[in-house]
Image (cartoon, rainbow, N blue to C red; front, side, top):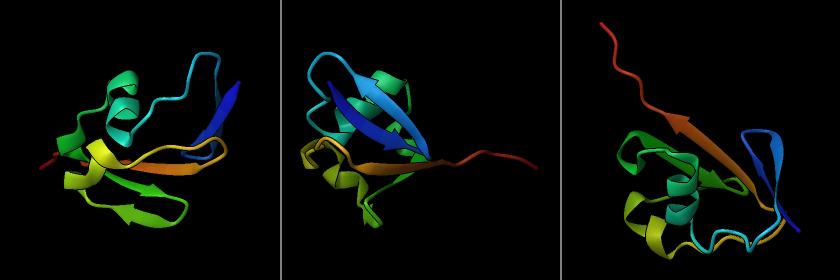
Length: 69
């Protein structure tokens, strides 16, 4: 089993870990256009989501933009 800490909550994956940040966002149902992502304290540029590999034990913070008015 592999584990990622997402927004402070540990989440285990029984099957292989999502290979990239883009795959993780898709699995979580998060629209990449509306989120800022940080892995282990480093901001990830949107154009790099598809090539940013994930490893067991990483800490990921996802911040979504919400419209209001």
